[in-house]
Image (cartoon, rainbow, N blue to C red):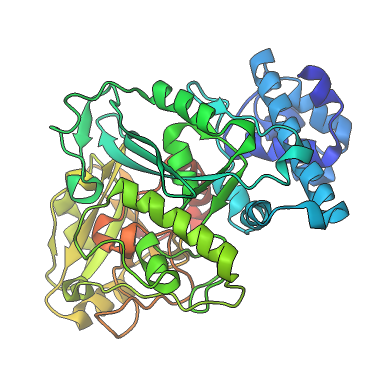
Length: 463
């Protein structure tokens, strides 16, 4: 693995250094900027863009990591080499590439792919699955589709509790309940359809599921799913032969970085809904739906942009603001003093508590009060992960401590019964229901934390 890293092209080393930056990884000389500050007497960390550094500097930094990490870096080199080989093969032998593999490449070309499929598979418990020889891979047409249901655990993490896999004939290849082997804080039964009673007899572990999937995906079989990176992250599986059904269609009424819910996409492409409003998910039906979307794309093309069905939003949400990424130690009641009018604030809701943070809704009597409260709120205007306008607020407590969190509207536009996003839509929870919105996971947490510090000087402190 060390030899593979030493022989890597500069472009590959750049990607690996960026990976260490994104995940906050440090070698014996610290992180990337620490390394530059210590070892470059001329420029220090002032030129930190890996692309602007020579190959030997990039390699020297990566070699400061322990052997286990260098072994993992070697796997990243192999992954990058495989991607390059696939792209070259498709260029040299376009007639030999199967339609399924073209959808794999279409997924990989999506602007959100690199961000969402850059997994921390160096961590304990992760499995990196091989794809086999590229020449054999490119003509392969074998596919399976997957869907998972996750619960919230007391340690703030999500755990898989049900996994379903079907093939392109919709034959069930795997349907199992999974014991997370740790305390569950919220079963989210209204979403997952899985209850405490359902898991009482569950004996399969995540490791068992990983072994089953490794067998199912042997020889580089294509794995299909909707927003599949979320399932793979929960399963702790790093795999590159994927078709993400959120990425393979063009949308006439959504920005490039946005993706529709599975239910709405099925309405637009397949002509039917996979669940009624308020009905919990059916893991098996969702896996079948993902497969049917991929098959429809293969059969009918859908090369032109499609109009995605919109989701109804409860009219009551027009009268609310959403406060999120609130530290769990801050009582809800203290939020009242930053808003004009006489709003009421929900208690902390268990399903909205994610590790160190929670979210809650601030309710008003009139829609005009919502607009006024948001406009008068002191804070730096930013965008959330879906591109929606929000404000970053610093609240000064009576103790003198300053607390940072974000506030945004629940609904944009003038039509209360239809979502109307200004520029971008978020990565949706099913049917983009704001009531089920959660704080982003660990990877987004790091990204936002760095952004928070960068913008801090411009944020108004609310006394």
